[in-house]
Length: 353
Image 1 (tube, rainbow, N blue to C red):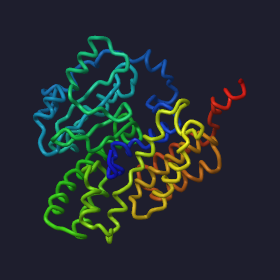
Image 2: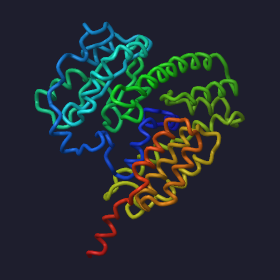
Image 3: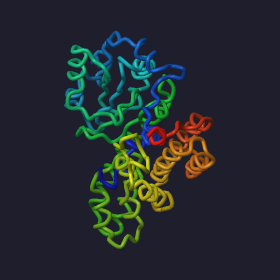
C-alpha cells in the first residue's frame, strides 16, 4: 500500500474492524444474541434457493466474476459477499437487500454479482465458489455481509463492510452509500482528466480534490502531488504523504495478539505517529479519525473502559459528528464502554513462572 491509500474506504470503511483487529478480536458479524456456534449450526451450507446471479432477474446480474468484468462498462462491478455456512444474516440479506429493485436503481450501469464466501466448504461448495469468484479481489478482512465495488478494470475502489455501512437487513445504509461511492468514482475520473491538463500548484490542488474523495485513489497520487508542488505551497503533499493504515499492518502478527508493547518494541513510536496524523489539520478528517481508532483499540486493550478510552472516542466523534466514522465510534462506545478488557495473558504467564 502506498501513502495515498489512507483515503481508501475499502480499508477505512472497515473502521470498526480496525479497532477490533487492534484488540485481536474477530469482526462482529453476528446478530446480537447469536453465538458463533449458533451461527454455524443454524445456517444452511447450501446456496439459497434461486440463483442470485441469474441474468433472467435483470440484464445486469451476472453468474460469475469473469462474466461481470467482461460485461463491465464505466461503472464497473458491484459485488455482494455473503457467508453461507457461517453468517445467516448475510444469507437473509440476499433477498431482503441484494435482490431489491432499489439496488439496481442506485448502481448505475454497474454489473451486479453475489459471491459466497465459505469458511468450511465441502469440495462441492469450494468448486462452486471458485466458479463464481475466480480472479476476483478478496474483500478486506473477510467481513460478511459486505459490498465490494470495483472499476471496469477490476480494481477495488470501495468496500462497505458489515452492518455499520449496510445498515439493517434491508441494507438501508448500503442503498445510501453505494451511489455516493459510485459518484466519487465518476468524479475521480473527471478530476484526473483535469489534472492531466495543468501543471504546478494548480495540478496539486486538483490532486488534493482527488485525495479527498471517499474511495481508493491512484497509488501514485502522492508522488504526482510532490512532483507538481515540491515546496508544498498547497498543503496537498502533507495530506497525501501519510498512511495510517500502515501503522496497523506493522502492529499485526505479534505472538499474543496485536498492539502489545512487550512483543512490539516499536509500539510507542507507532502510536506517536498516529497522534501526528490526528494533529495535522492538512490531513483529511476521515484519515485522522482512522488514526484515532488505532489509539482507541490500544487503549481498550491496555486499560479497558477507561476515562481515556472514552475521551479518545469522543475526540474522534468531535472531528466530524456526522461522518460514518463517528457513527462507528459511537457504536464502539456503546459496545465496549461498559466493561473491562481481558487481562493480558503475558502477565498471567509471568506470574506462573
